Structure formats: structure tokens, C-alpha cells
Image 1 (cartoon, protein in one colour):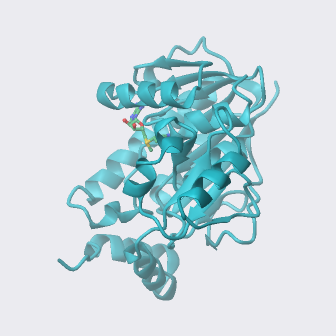
Image 2 (cartoon, helix red, strand yellow; image 1 turned 135 degrees about the vertical axis):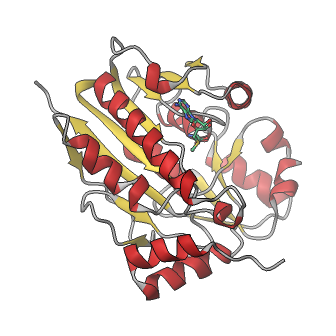
Length: 297
Ligand code: SAM
């Protein structure tokens, strides 16, 4: 069946980006994604993974902005899932866009970090790896079934410093205080092929922006003064990104911090000059990333 985006989405895109950019976004959303992976440096290293891929005649490319990421040229996900390096948790199949928020948050050993909407754990395990498995990470997830998948992935990837909380992150106690927070918020998936699915509706976008606002308010309450957080979504719509941030930041003493990405990463126009909207294409899902610092009182 031919894939088409719903009319309401096309209209929203045109209103936000104009006709030419919108047509290009839709064409790119239609393209199949290349398989990309991240080396799990808790259990392995780039050289070991290169050798294992070469031994299987799997060709790959590296990226100049992230040594641990590989673009796979000639194998699908099911082939990679058969490899020992996959079964042993030495690699994690992850879209390149999804690797950006942990890099931007820049976790360090001994920091107290909250991953507010964590399952299935791609970014939690990356936060663990980036901090040499030495940050104290709390991974919160509301959905119990997805929470089980999160626990499975943490175990498989050897992310042993992560404490899982199966709760609504919006109800976390205000007495918590974290050095850093990742809010990879639940969203409509408007930057992904979710736009071709029947659950992609205007109501989903509206419901998502309400949840996002609630979660961002909570994040800014339980972030330490002077602490930093990253807000990200796999949506390219300003109702789920710029508008949520602009509305919430009015009520907090916090500043946006400039997010700089490699020139290789194509971006869309963004209403917040410090944030980035990654354009969807064969390698990247459409993604929004913003960084916020809570002002020291
Ligand atoms: N960060 C994850 C990763 O990289 O693997 C993907 C997270 S996904 C975009 C959003 C997650 O938030 C979903 O697993 C969803 O069940 C969860 N979620 C939705 N509302 C939540 C809430 N109020 N509190 C905690 N988790 C929530």
C-alpha cells in the first residue's frame, strides 16, 4: 500500500516550514532508514566491533562527530541481531538522532543523573557508557511492560549503576535533586515513520504536548540550581518542542544553552536559536534537542 501522510500533518508542516521544505521533509520520511549502531564501550571497543563486522563481510562507515557510531552499508537489522556482538550486548542498534541527546547532556562519572522517560533504554545505556559506567543514573519509566524491556537492556548492556523507577515521572517527589536530567519526552513521533500509522492524529500531538509540559515543569523543579538538562523529542513540530519550552521557561529561572552539532547533520529552521531540529533523512530521524541550565540562586 502506498504510504501517505495525513492532511492535517501536511498542513502543520507547511504552516511551520513553508511548502518547499515540507515537501522535502515528507519525501525524506518516505525513505527507508539505514541501519546504524552504537558500540557499547562498557563491554567492548571500536576496534573489536570493526574486526567482528569485517569478519562477517559487513561493510560500515564511521562518523566524524561520534567515534562510537557506525553506519551499516550492506546488512539489515535481523542479520545484525544474529551476531555474537549483538547477543552479548557489545553493540546497540540505535538511530543516529537518538544518540545526540546523551552526547549533548555530556554525563560525567559520579554525577547524579535522571533519565525521566527511559524505556527501552537506548539513551540510558548510552549515558552509562559515556560516563564510563560511573554516573549514578536513575531511569524512570511509567509503562510497566516497557519498563521490563528497559531492565533487560540495562542488564544486557552491563549498565550496572542504573536504578530503575517504574513511575509517572510527573509525580516524582520535589525533594529529588539531580545534577543532570535527560527528558527524552513521549511524543507524536512526527519526525519518524510513525506519521504513516493510524495512531498518528492531531489528538496525539495535543496530548503529547500536555504531557511534555508537565514533565518539563517537573524536570526543572528537581534539577539542581546550576544543573543542566536536555529536552528532546522525535517530533519536528513546534507544538511539541519550541512552544513547550517557551511556555515552561517563563515560570523558571533557567536559560537555554547553545546546542552545536556537526555540519554533517542537516537541520531544519528552529524558532529557538539555541536549539536544533534535526531534519529526517536516510540516516536521521527528525529530532529536536534543546539544552537548559537552571540558574544558580
Ligand atoms: N529514551 C528512550 C530511549 O532512548 O530508549 C525512549 C523514550 S520514549 C520517547 C518515551 C518513553 O516515555 C516511553 O517509554 C513512555 O512509556 C514513557 N513515558 C510516557 N509518559 C511518561 C511519564 N509520565 N513518566 C515516565 N515515563 C513516561
